[in-house]
Image (cartoon, rainbow, N blue to C red; front, top):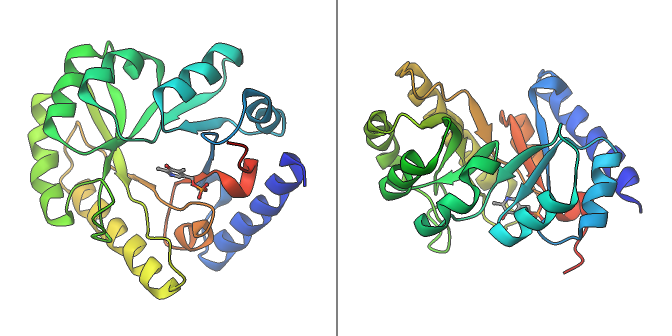
Length: 226
Ligand SMILES: *Cc1c(COP(=O)(O)O)cnc(C)c1O
């Protein structure tokens, strides 16, 4: 299948999930995660209509940005970001999906020229291998971000475990949404927190039904070349 054909299938699935949940398709942003594919395949996705590109490594982000000269693209950094690497990318991305500690917020605040749209990464599933804040720590963490004017909390992000149990996956997405609403209700000027970044190749239909506004799809959309 070509990227374009895969995109059509994914679009259909997103539309069905939106219908099931009585949501508008326009409220779901599709990020193509290109970490496993070449510049050429990334370009094919863009030619098929993709606007949001997600990378989890600095080198991957930079090689795509150097070789893709389209200025309407929105760049998402979705991987763990080491504080000492912040300066290399922070002024070249539109969204960061992995804010998970104050030391990172501090470094971003020091290096960013403009406020950075950040998602706080939350480890809802409790898997040890996953990064992110414990859900119970999120409210306190958000309030501390008032000291860092270059951080704008646009929403929360999570990764569900790679399991079959759809009920369990839904519960994780629902918990993230509940937490997002709690933060939104604080009405902090630096944390509008109206977005939910959740859903990957295996579970994005569930994520859309549970309220995702950004879904991050790699394998199902662009495949895996490396
Ligand atoms: C790799 C990755 C994705 C996409 O994973 P697929 O299963 O290939 O769709 C989404 N989010 C993050 C944070 C990732 O690292």
